[in-house]
Structure formats: C-alpha cells, structure tokens
Image (cartoon, rainbow over all chains, first blue to last red):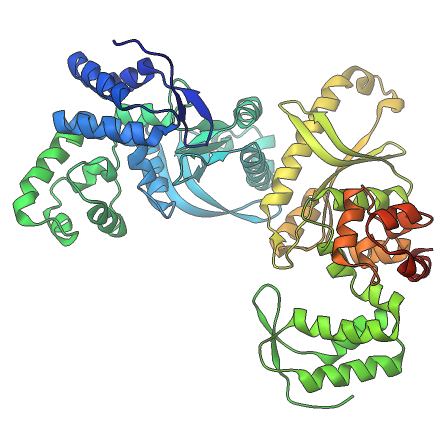
Length: 288
Length: 288
C-alpha cells in the first residue's frame, strides 16, 4: 500500500481524525471485495484525499468504485447509509429490529401500549421467548452525528422498572406461591442505528439493559445481526432510486427479502419493466 | 365588570382558549393591585381584545398599565416573565432554586458530580437537612411553550436510583448493624420554570419524586415559593434594562436581594448615577 504523510479528515460529528488507509481497506474487505480491488480503491482514494475531507465523501467515492465492480459487495458496504435512508420516520427501523429478533426465535409485536405501575408507556418492540420478555426502544437517527447519551438508557431503565413493577403487583400471589408458570424475566433493550456515548454503554451494561448500536457490542452489533441473518433493508439495493425506495417503504415494505416475488410492488414504486429483471437479480443475490 | 361575548385568545403553546376576565383580574389582585386599578385594567384590556390575540400580548399590555400605577405590584406580576429572562444559560435558575431550598433550612450545594453504582452524574442542586438528601434537577426553559414530558422524571428517577444504590452499597455494613447515624432518605426532585405534562406529574407523584413547576403542586409551586420567601430574581425589577440585568447575571448575581448595598455592581452594569436612587428604592420595596 502506498505511504504518505497522515492527512486529517472530518468525521460526521465534526471531529477531526487522521485518515487511516487500513480502516478503509478493512471495511472494503468486510463487504466482500477482493484484495486487488481493495488495493486499487484505497490507492485511488489516497490520491484524491485533501485535509479536512469529510469521511462521508471518502465513503461515497470508494462506494462508487466498489459499485462499479461488484453490486452485492457494494450493498453490504453501504449498509450504514442504507439504514440512514430508512427515515424520516422511525417505523421502518422498528420493523427491521422486530425482524432481527424474530429470526432469533422471539415472538414479536411492534408499537405496543403497556401499563406501568405509574403511567402507560408506548414500547416500540415487545419480544417474547421462553419466559423472557424483551422490551425494546428503537432510537433511529438519520444523521450519523446523532448519538444517544446516558439519558436514553436512564429513562428506558425507569420505564421498564415501571412496567415490571406493575406486572409484579399483578402476579404477586402466584409468585409467592412459587408458581413457575408465572415467572418471567423482563429485560430492557435499546437498538440504535448510530452510536451510544461511553457513559450510556457503561450505564447500560451495569444496569442490565441490552444495548445494540451500529458497532456495539463487539459480538451482536446491529451490523453483525443484519449481516448474519441477511435481513438487509431494501435501501441497501443499489439498483433502486431513492424515490423508488421511499415509495416501497410507504407501502410498508422494509426488508430486501420482502421484495422477492413482489413484481407488482416494484412496478407500483416506479420501476419500469425493462429494469425489473436487473432489480430482481440484485434482490436474489443480496437476500435470496 | 363589563359583559361581552367570549373571545378566543392564543396561548403560548399555540392552543386556543376563551379569554376569561376573572383570570386576569385574579392575577392582578395577586400582584397586589387595588380593586379600582384591577377593574380599570380589565376594562381597557377587553376594549382592545381581538380574536386570536396572544396571551403574551394581553399580559404585556396589562403589565404596562400596572407598571405605570405601582412598581412592586408590577414586579410580582411579571415574575413568570422574569424567570424567562434569567436565560440563556440554566445556571441562574439553579442558583435561584438553591436559594429557595436554603431558606427552607437545607444546606445547599450547586453543580455537584456524584458517583452512582453505574456511572457518574452531575446533579444541579444537592440539598441536605436532617438525614434527608434532596437531589435536584433544574429544567430551565426560556420559552413558555416548552414543557417537560414524562421522559424527564423517568431519567431523573433512574439517575437517583443509581446514586442511591451506590450509597447503599457503601453503607451496607452500617445499615445492617442498625447504626442510625447512617440512615438517610434520598429524594429526587425536579424544578422547572415552565410546566410538566400530565403524564410527567402522574409518574412523578407515583414514583416519589418531588415535582415543582411554575404552578404545580397547588401548595408549594415555584410561584408560591418565590412569593412567600420574597426571593425575587433581579430580572423582576422594572427599573433595570434587559442589558443591565444581563450584565448583573454575568457577574453571578441572581436575586434581587443580592443587589442591596451593591452600588458598585449596579454602576458596573451600566446604571447611571442619576438613576441609581430610583433603582435602589425599587430594590428595597420589592425585596428589602
């Protein structure tokens, strides 16, 4: 790989960091690009680099090259961006999180009102499996700079305590009689497509909340959960326009695999019949 | 009082309500205006009323008349606005809340870092009295439309639980041995200069938090605490300009009574010597 003096670049948060060619190479490899292609893209990127260049722009240029070479790799590479494109409402992200929990064996309900001991709460995703009830709050942001600070897990903890207290109040008799049918573990969880602050992560793990962000925890991050299950959002597809994607989201479709066999939905979203075969091929490659 | 068809007016939140002359009269009486003056201001207000008139404008016009007639009454009347003028930072409001607790016999510290079981927290006001520790969060808003929803008491509850757990961890031995020197009641509190939503109030009282807003609870609201203790913010004074008030706040002065005998601070804030006597008289009248 070529050597040159480190150049400062600008992150989405506005912070500066030195450009790290290894980091770009790793993300390209992770997306499945072959080594020769990785080296070519990194070299081209470094040739175009200037001080203060936004990481977003670097990513866009690398992505454009990757896309020319291999579509499914590009779709995986652009996953972070694809999640941003699920907005502006948080609902498609809630659906995605629900689907990720469903493939892990949970029974899932989205957008539930639940009574606590003190007040009623709206819970984005309620997931149940073998006596464990996961109460999930989804924090969707359509800007990379937006992170969730410690106040988010704090209020989620109090909310889940309130719901758990109500449930314990109601089942007091059965629990005292040792009726195991009524034993249940409640666990709070927060899924976000961006990041948590260090404080938020520390409070989350210490207080028993499950925190999942784009790249946290190391095992079981959002990126990993999506990659492993191949539950790519339809915004990952490279052969659809932004407007077509939006129209599919408005029809309530969220996942790439929900488009399999959905010719009519694709046509209704504006995909002309001469492009249909190409789009369907990409769907089959990415998530079939 | 004159009779006419009810006219809809516009609240700061954007909601419409029917203008109620009795309400205006009550607030003028509360400010200490004599009955003849109250009737005159209400009559003049109704003559100028038009559908959709902002409550703020109604208040401003009534205040202008009141001010012409009697300065200390005007200062009390404009207390709500005076609190808004404590901004833009929340620090003067924290100082005011600290002073309100101090006159109730609490020992007060402002802006403390406290270690919880999971993370460290910044607590706006820590107030202690006879084994009770009040941990206070101050929510200062400089727009009347901004209210605190249920998320605020939720995250404050979790924060105070975290601090209390840490304290209980540390004093476990003493507490088990029944050493009453180590018994302590922790109580979370939230003071705001605007309002809480109904949900927030319900969660607060159910979960044992002390919630104080402009007009809540009925006994011991912020308005009442200030009126009873005469701890008026210096922004209540009608003889100082906005700029002079700001310069005094920047010097760390917050309360009207802190200005007693502070000739130099007043001069440094831009009050010319020929106006000094008038300002000092108003200070003595309002908070001496």
